[in-house]
Length: 109
Image 1 (cartoon, rainbow, N blue to C red):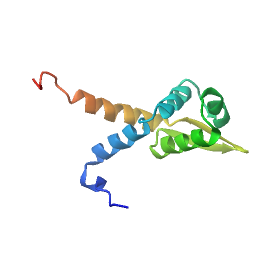
Image 2 (image 1 turned 30 degrees about the vertical axis):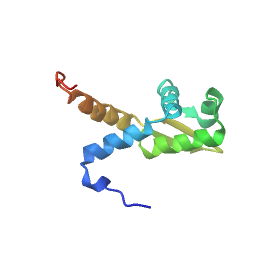
Image 3 (image 1 turned 135 degrees about the horizontal axis):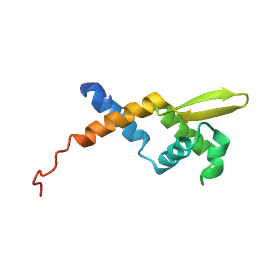
């Protein structure tokens, strides 16, 4: 496996890329929409709302958790997931900064 060059980019660029990767699949976007509309959510509830298997949903939850956008707590035999408010607001800020950097009118093509 090749070496990553992510350490050659800024903290800002790496964070935005981490969020973009997490948002890069429609299933993960759907999961975030489900979680954003509730206070908490048990994984089984998410599986019931998506046309995906439990194992596939679990993999997507893992990606979202690694990106920091969600957090999960073990409650007995289940894991309860919710939006990580602090990281959610940070992601919103970092992504807004990226989009706000475009001033328009570049005359490209």
